Each structure stands twice: as C-alpha cells, then as structure tokens.
Image 1: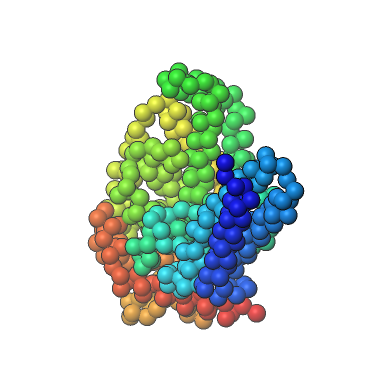
Image 2: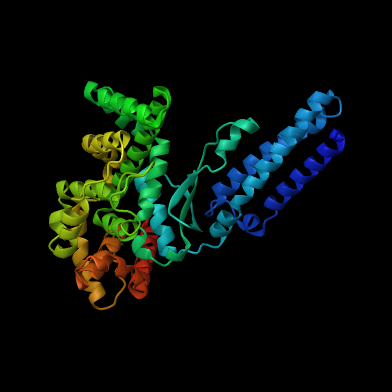
Length: 434
C-alpha cells in the first residue's frame, strides 16, 4: 500500500512548482495593467489562486484525516496538478499578448470589432494556432472544481488564427465572426432566436420528427437523439449569428474573406457544428442584396459576384440524414429572425453602403498615387471598414475571376499597405478624441 503522506507531499510540491513556473513566465510578468493581455493575466492569476486555496485547505486538513479521507485528499492533489498543467496552455497566449505576431493595424482593427459587435472593449489576444477559433474566459470551466465565483470585468478573449496567415491582412474580416462568438455568449441573442421558432407548432413538429428518425436510424433513445439535435441546432444557429455579426458590421469584405479561406476547405458538406459553406454564403448574399450592398459592389466585380451567387450559393447542400435535413430547413426559416436580432445587437454599428460610398472615392484617389488611405480630405480618419473593403475591391477588380479570391492573399505588398493605412487611421481617430 502506498504511503499516503509522502504521496500527498510529493503532489503538493509538484503543484506548487507548476504554479510558480506559470507565474514566473517572463512574458506574463511583463504585461502591465490595461495593456493587451492584462485581463487574461488576471484571469490566470485568479484561477491559480483558486488552485492554491484548495491545495492549502488539503494540506491543513490532511494530517488529522482518516486514511480514507487522506486517500481523497491525494486524489484532489492529483486533480489540482492536472488543472495547473492544463493552465500551462496559456503560455503561448501570454507570449502573443506581450509580443504580438500581428501588425499594429490588425490589432487595432480587432479591438474596434469588439466595441462594434459586443458593445465593449475586449482584452483580445490573437494567438497563432492552426485555425480560426475563439476562447473566452478560457479557464472558467475549472471554476466549479475550484469553488470559484464567475469573474466580471474586462473579458479576456483568445482569438486563434492560422499562424501562416499572420500577414494575410485581407482575412481580417474573419475576426468579426470570431468576436461574434463573444457577443452570442454575453447576450441572450441565441436563446431569443431559438425561442422565437421553437414555440411554433410546425417547427416543433419538424424537430420531433427529425429526433424520432435520428433515434431510429442511430438506434439510440429519443431523449439522446433530442439532446444531440438540440445541441446541433444551437451550434448551427450560433455560426449563422456570428456570420451575420460579421457581414452586418463590415459589409461585403467579410464575404470575400470568408469565401477566400473557407471554400477551399468545404463547399456543400454539413458539419456537426457548422452549416455547409454554400448555405452560409447564400445567407450572406441574401443580406447584402436586401441591404443595398450588392448594387454597390457587384458591378465592379461581376464575374466573381456571379460565381458566388450562381455556383456557390446555388449549390444544394448534402443531406445525409434526417437531422441535417431538419437543420437546413431550420436555418432557412430562421434567416430573417437571425438577421433582425443581429441588427438589434449591433445597433448603429451596422455598416451601410451609404457610409462606404463617399469614402470609397477618397480611398481610390489616394491609392492611385500610392498614398496611405488613412485620412479624409477634411482631416478626419477614414473608416477602417471602408479601408479593408477597398483593399478587397482593389485586388478583385484588377482580375475579376474566382481564382483571384485565393490569389489575392499572396499579394503581400498590397496587404501590408492597407494594414498600415488601418493603423494610421486608428491612430488618427485616437488622437482626434477629446
């Protein structure tokens, strides 16, 4: 039988060492208050303090505990070690916060997206990873085991991005989708959209039929099938809401960034969490047409616009099972509700064609002479949304064919030029504030 006293002592010492390693990480100690990563650092410290408290409580009570209780304290100490090791995954996030691999213009653009879409300033930490994804309050799932209250204050949000795309500034609009996830988490928008349809008898009947068919084909209970279907409905609706956050906040630039990156990975295949890409493109095009954007940009790039509409959006998504068929029908039915609730969330931050038009001509004039398009003729800053959309249109107009959506990402010079313009415009906007 193992010596519980020595085992506990070893585990306590190991946990303390792991905590000290994370706290002493140089990049973490270099982050000052109100700097990028400061809320993330506070979140890490808050969670580590919870681990320490549990560890100290176990150390105080262990000597007088019964053998069976001591065995439980050993299990707890081992769990606490696992939690701290899990928290070591924050090391690259802290490094990216201290020394970002994205250009300043990209960082300013992302910060502005948080304010426009979420209505608050986020502690957004872009992190070079393998794909685009989002982690908000990343260690909050540990709070229950540690007995910690939910944190408040600035939201630490880790925005993962493909590390090889750090200079692909034309993809910046994709961050609007990722920021949209925080808006969905922070508000009741998802539940409001679901509730608006689940109360309809036809919608509920369709859900129940898909649940029953799924249960029969998968040989699982109706309860389990219902849980899986509801989870996928929430996941698909979340993705559509995030797409709407991005397309309404930025206009067509999100569609071009989305298509250039996602269409090479998937086209008409439904995912567990994501609707088919062709369906998502169709929803974006429908919004752009209804809001007046299509008339503003389609004439400049007719071939690409036609391809997106007639080849991509017109594709019939694969329907391998009853659940997917229901979800596709649900997304179509929920389209206006998703759009309406997103517009309400964004408010005045919805980007309109009438806002872009006057600035587009200024940007075009400045870029014609290789002048950074950062400032209007009246001295005020150009809208960063107009700059990124103009960047896309400038490369697409030069060679109006679908392949240009992909080739544009290889134009390093143009992307660096417009990223610098975004940086200068953001700085001018900051200097102009009283």
